[in-house]
Amino acid sequence: MQCDCCGNDYDKAFQVIKAGKTYTFDSFECAIHKLAPTCAHCGMRIIGHGLEAGAQMFCCDHCAEATGVKELRDRA
Image (tube, rainbow, N blue to C red; front, side, top):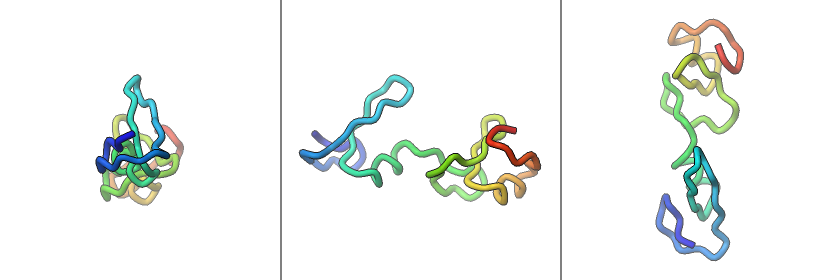
């Protein structure tokens, strides 16, 4: 199967379904690059749970606080 991120044709590729759309990847690195949200403050890919404030996602409470979000929960 061919990776949707890098185009590599790999016999050990895997698929991920997100919001009803199926993606094929040859590595977790490609899946993260294509699907992981980015922090609204620093732009880093969010690999873990992150923080969510309205429509914004943050990689950590430092970035959330830097934009004025003071409630440090998964969803503010």
